[in-house]
Length: 628
Ligand SMILES: [Zn+2]
Image (tube, rainbow, N blue to C red; front, side, top):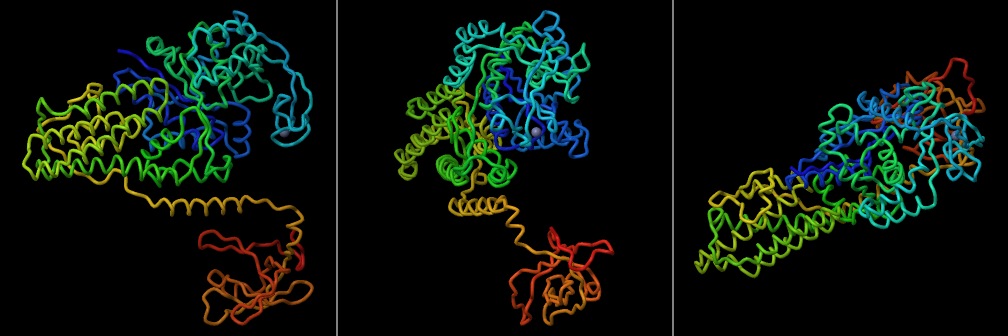
């Protein structure tokens, strides 16, 4: 049996899963499912990268241990992969003990053979952040990019990997394997980078503890990238199940984002060569998403939060859209309107309607029975379908998901035209039973093949479609042939696969949300805040405003006079509770009439949902004290 080993990067647990993670993982899943469908023995690895200074620091800030922080984030990833139907074979965590042993064993081995040596690392160091930065990372060449404080030039002992010794070997490897990096333009980038000359790289740190210790020098922990990259071999059995490792290594495909290409296309093959392993066969670097025409930002991330997308559109539509909309390897724009447009056009109209029409006619004219074709039936759709299978295969081999899907939609559109031209309703009316049977057979069998090749992209919806076509819901390799539909079996109409969406309404809602998010994110200067005058005041009198539920009229002692305000706290506090209480009073608000009473400012309360809380003060807080 042919094997196929595909991976995603392991995701850093300093982050919640976002669109980028989902994109990479969906792509890897579609490849894994497609290869299984083609009869390959597939191993699909994903997981999390859990070591490093950032994790140590965020854990400390949250009052957790680094492992506890990692545990809490891993749950989010696993839950999302379940919702997206990601069919991984194994989920690796770099804190797993088998992985730590492998990393230490290889570190020791490379040290023993001289590829790792102890040297001195010199760099720009930010003491409060405990971080080294390269010159190019610094802001204005002297400030820490994280906290903005000035950095210092610092030297520390560090273990180095002799990357410089691998420059020629890497260049030779690239020449012998022109398909090693996809897309092609990126292969050229990598080659020019290596040709410029490689320096040895620092692969240990002494400034933090949260990492795998260097086995022979406990002062040092192993740098996260050296640790992380080896997940691709520890996760597939190296050191625990060497038979399995031998079967699947080298990896056939590492799918990654373009930001981490250098680690995968330069360092990783060099590490592997040093440790005596074959480099992977291909590294595919995909592009990045903008959102609604804007560069990704914190508030926009929310707009494309993967769980929200699944809630709104369903996992399969999201999977389809991400791989159909933009050629894999290029950057693209994620817009809700474009997604809704794909769902309505490609999925509901082209595919959904075709299925609906063919099932309706089969039920109406043939009692739902899948007809037996005759030898002289026309072969038009059969030829197109076989061509589709070939093309999909060719495109999937180069990870051109959008081209593969285009090839499928050509057949879907041809089948829609075929109905119009062959007019089954006319054949039925004229009693041309044999022709009618042939036409419907051609259509049913074409739909079956379409569902089979689309199954890796949309596993849940295509399983439903196959069931409606009277076929087993999970396709097998032998189903990738013409003529496998169970003749004599029955089709059954189900609910529409892809309900239609209101594109304009969706676009409006998303625009509104982005606007609100941008307003929320708007920052104010200290001079803006200085305009607001808030003081501590004491409630002298309180009475309900008649004929209202919430409004209370308050008379306040402000320390420099008496003011009347109308406050909406009546549902939570009785007038009796308010008298004598100290409150926060916004004193320079323009007066406003409420129910005929002039409110001279307002009092401040915290609220969430339908709960309301007035702040409390120490006994001796003086009336008139100003809040700054
Ligand atoms: Zn700093």
